[in-house]
Amino acid sequence: MQISEKSYVAIDYRLSLASGKEIDRSPEGQTFGFITGAGQVIPGLEKGLLGRAAGDVAKIVVDPQDAYGEVDENLFQDIPRTQFPDDCEIEPGMRFHAEGPHGPVMLTVKDVSNPESVTVDLNHPLAGLQLHFDVKVVEVREPSAEELAAVENQAAGCGCGCGTQDQSDCSSGGCNCG
Image (cartoon, rainbow, N blue to C red; front, side, top):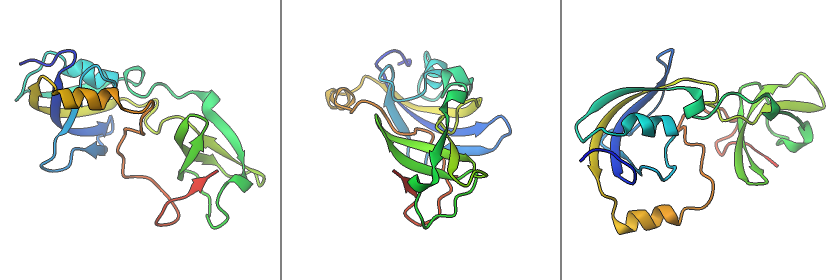
């Protein structure tokens, strides 16, 4: 069976940047499964998999517009320092989880030179980057009724999706800003 709209697909993958730096991979012995057309993966990866079958191996390059978009300068904002935890030494590159009007968001500290505020980037951490996937298609089949129902019942919005482990925080529980 070939991957088409509404197929259940399970893959092993490695995600890297153009530099070759690995930023995510499927855990050893665990495939990543999803249903095509359900918005569970970035569009460029899904497009690159269409027509493939179990056993196929592919290198798929996804440009920003088919991944997490280009960097939007309007998503750089100044937030008062009082909105950050008192016990946290804030430095550029740190990432914080915050609650936005539409649910949780991740923000990245860009500048801390102003004593009154912190400049943050609300773009997805992979915005503006070309993504390189090394993929092995492990399984392709019709989704079960339970899998389709689970997709239909998913809450609006989704998590970060990048899976990167390279997130800076300043305590074992991470920092949150409110």
